[in-house]
Length: 533
Image (cartoon, rainbow, N blue to C red; front, top):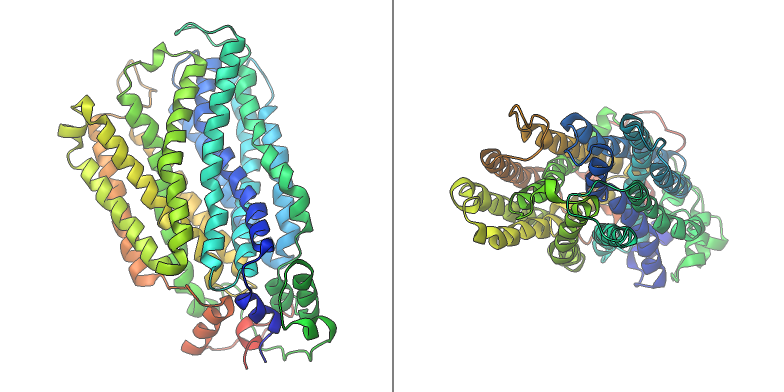
């Protein structure tokens, strides 16, 4: 007999608690984006404060970008696993505490005179920050997928993820506001003036403000109950699952489960994570989710670096002629324009169309149009885009399309799909594995780009301004990565639109001949067997 609380969740009407869950879970992604994307203007300020306006050494710069990404990948693996072992809600709060404390820690990075001490301290706190950010990815997606109904589940998860776009925009806005306030407080600075002592406070303030959204949502996050699917399918406590859902949502036909202990379902033989049976049932899905996320993060994070490099190339004012506040303001302003015109609209197009078109079609479409734009920008780059200053606006429009189709495409769908494909007892872990693969792709793209575009001229050995030919090659490589994503999605990714989370696993169990293993893992039972009629 099906578990009524789960079937009722799948059929539940949209109600206030769904939107509350979107806001509470989305604020974690908001904070994630703020902290991960404010580092670019902050590094500009640090270069003026501690490096006298010179570009930071390539090794130091690439490490500063990669350290938070490495922490994020580690957090996705560790907290994704813990989310399946001890519960989504318990680990969710821990991740938020880590984000809040480490954001303040970044601002209080020790030393104010020795740059090596500052960079090591900042790197340490950003790694810890990455751990909290990483844990928030699988837990936010899993919690939202397990609360949502099956008809609008994709839109709800996409809405949570879309808070990243708002986080990027607010990060840029806060950076610009802080720069303007400190510049006015200093009475204005000459164009080539040395960085004042107050600039060392400004970049720290920008980093610490990232803790505020997380702190504001901590109380409401702690009030969220454990998801019904975890309680019923992993802890095997159907009564408690029904009570939790009755407390926060208006759901019909579950009153008997909340008051009467149902007969315990027979515990079937269960397969372990990474067993032969697991790989037979879910190996293809895990490969597709992980590899697609790896590919899109190469593109997404490299594109963000390319953005500032491309348009600094067109800037009429050389970087050496900027004071500390103007340099950071320019980077933040460019990020705000892209976020407002391309990134945020792309997220919300996905929210609207994800449950009408489907995950796979949107993912293929996004990869396809990104590939087209990269090839259009890359093939004639050396003899057209880089030669004519009047083409700057056209290239800006093309680049905006990349971010639009990235988010109305694989950047959002790779976050959604792993939260829908796997059984409840493995869902958070598998999402964390997929996300960690993505962050490894981000490290490859970020570090690889910085080293590949490093000038080797004797006088500018440590400068990070790409030459025209290298820029063209970068565009073409990214176009090739997008083409690879089209094939991986088409060949390996399954559509999950309009199906309950249990139906996805149930279909796999029916379509595969399973050699059942005799062990039962911590009394956890298969969702597919629990839901057999």
